[in-house]
Amino acid sequence: MSHSYGDRLALDAISLGVEAGEIFGLLGPNGGGKTTLFRILSTLIPLARGSVSVFGHDLKTDAQSVRREMGVIFQSPSLDKKLTVLENLRHQGRLYGLSGKPLMDRIREMLDRVRLSDRANDFVEKLSGGLQRRVEVAKSLLHRPRLLLLDEPTTGLDPGARKDLWDYIGELKRNEGTTVLVTTHLMDEAEKCDRLGVLDRGHLVAIDTPDALRRKIGGEVIIARTRDPQRLCEGIAQKFGGEPKVLDDTVRIERAGGHTWVAQLMEAFPGQIDTVTIGRPTLEDVFIQLTGHRFWVRDGDGGGKP
Amino acid sequence: MNAPWMLASWTLLVRELTRFFRQRNRVMGAFGSPLIFWVLIGAGFSSSFRPPGGSVNMSSMEYLFPGTMTLIILFTSIFSTISIIEDRREGFLQSVLVAPISPAAIVLGKILGGSAVAVMQAVVFLLLAPLAGIHMTLSSALASIGVAVLLSFALTGLGFVIAWRMDSTQGFHAIMNLFLIPMWLLSGSFFPSAGAPSWLGWLMRLNPLTYGVAALRRTLYAPDAFGTWNLPPLPMSLGITVLFGVVFFLLSLFMVERHHAPHST
View: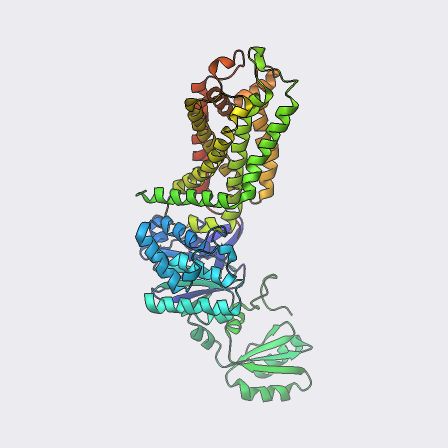
């Protein structure tokens, strides 16, 4: 699928498949196209070009069936703060055609699952951000969707509430076999997904498991901090080959057997290197490798700044 | 309540009422300011006021009564649609828009909810009619409540259409002052078209709200009170008010189908 806002191409011919029962993460910096993709999938904005199929239902021709299969958790809260927890859930259930005793039973069940049974009659505005998020989870799952969409669900949550939410997502996958599609810009959250699609400036630059993505780098990542990164980078390329990259005031090199190689590096450029760090590649390293720029650098037209 | 769209509309309506009763300041704003206006202007004009045509004996309070009721309905309708602006961008309406219900159910629920609140306020105001010297009968009370329902539906629909594509509540306030208040002033609420300059008279004739106010006037007072008021007849007034409501309902529906969500990230 593709999508433009006026002249700006927000999604450029994205093609991906999510397996039933997996947690699929869309990883990318803000402005990378995640939210646009999320909005199209959740049916908030119409699909302009391409096609989307959800459990065999076509998004373009049968959006209502797609909507019935899906629970959606938005980045910004969608609860009515002037209503109680119970009233919010009752309202949501009715939108999905539930009513009467079956609805009340289901609400009780969900409140129990997110451990909020004792807060049912509290106004949403009186709950903490983490508890409100739990209400959102209960709300999105009332109609037993097979697919749960979440857009940066931990935005604004404290670490405890973040962990809480991810534990619940894992539980949901294990116990109900619910398929989860989640967007995030946080590396530690991306690690928790079964598979990841990496989005950058509207392009899908990779799609694989977090481990397989890391293996693409092979070996370790060495980062050398220096006063003249350009000079060091050229020197390394001449002497050792490989593809060293300049990022701000550092030079990045990916190398198998990096821990022993570091000694050679230090000997080869005496006095030029201030500090060296060495580590297993993180998903951020993967992102840099794939796109040639840092995760958080969005302006400029690509590449690490010299 | 079997059809899914009825259930969806119903739950949106209930939500609107629940919110209204929990926000006391909204009650004060929508009801209080027209009331103050009515009392102050009505009393201020009481000695200089001369009823149009001069045929009947009518006080300024009595003359301004239907217009004040219309203003209460206008304010309430507008206040309940202003929430659309915030709700749609980030908030409550997001999850309504991705639910498997038709846009018609959403529009109907929201407009009926806003209308219900407006009608309730209008009914409370109607209780003050005897103070204005209006002698109500059961049938005139019921008829004027009926007109209030039609008028509420139409004005909430108008508010919906204005609010849907707006990205800030400030914009709505500008529209209120530049468009909605003049529309009310030129509806026959404040002065009759009979004595107005002809260009103003034409604006009043083209204003759909004129017919709502006329219908209210005709249901509130005895028919023989009007003489040479140049007031449109009741069937025509009702017809145009119904049309007003239908047109803005369809426009709202069109807006929701066409511009489901804002076009920015």
